[in-house]
Image (cartoon, rainbow, N blue to C red):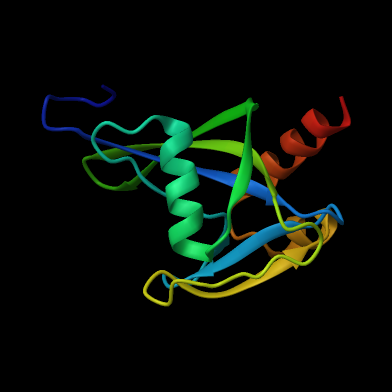
Length: 141
């Protein structure tokens, strides 16, 4: 656990950068106002991959193939006394270029299939923009 004392709370979420058949990346506009990727908290007994798959299905209604060969962790403090790790994978939609996205209105207010450059411009957080670069580099290999 990271922190200055035993009262530091640790959270963990998992999600993915989802690519469609045209090489576009799914961005979601979250209720909290920022643009990012589908992700959510782990539940008891779940693997990271299971969490990512469940959260993607819940937030955007997609079935995806998760590539666990790409695994990046971002760490930040969402509020005082809390450290959060978010594990991201690369995922590919099973429906090709035009999958049917069904957003979860309690969490997501909108979405966009963005080009890599469009994603870089739209994403709220620098760490998410860096994730796009790492995912693209991974996919080029």
